[in-house]
Length: 108
Image (tube, rainbow, N blue to C red; front, side, top):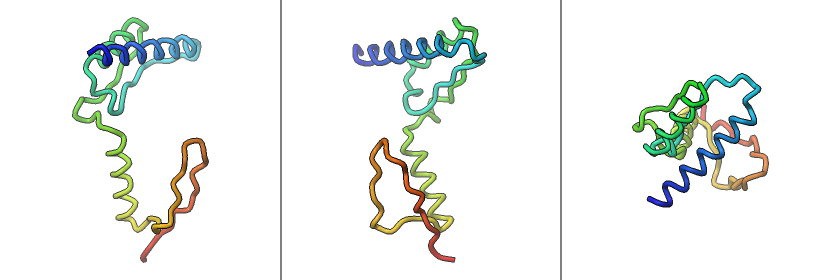
């Protein structure tokens, strides 16, 4: 519980800082999404932060707050179904490097 609270407190503090830095840009809303949005404490605290700042708050239902890996796998399935892919010689791309545009279409 202490770890969970520390993570939520950190995310709230960083979001507050970002909102202060962007306050002159006419922000109208705050969105919480991804796997982290399934955390009920974080959802509640972000909603409270948005309300204090007069922002709209948007967050998908918990059932739709899945890990990004699911979305990546779904895209892979769609691309494979459309005939796109790589051979087994594909290079892993480290963070910070440009992703090569080397996907090619297989089949008809």
